[in-house]
View 1: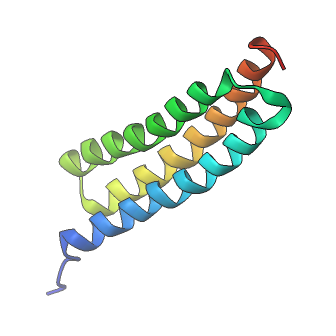
View 2 (view 1 turned 180 degrees about the vertical axis):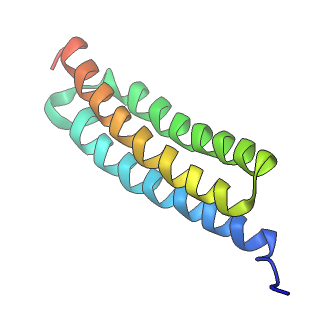
Length: 101
């Protein structure tokens, strides 16, 4: 019989899949949208987006884990993180023009 992967391993994998891109993309989006051209109004948008991109994949992974397994939750976290950061960057780019680029 195969031993299942312990839950704490999946928690670590999910945390890494969410936190590492969140830190990197927060730095990238802050540089691109909050500091370029003195767009001080974008600071709140960038901060809120970073918090949302930690919360949304976390909730999606928790739901996936509850319904399926830790492995499915890890895949869900990665998918939600990648897709979410693409959508976040595009949204922040559009908002930067709308708020006065």
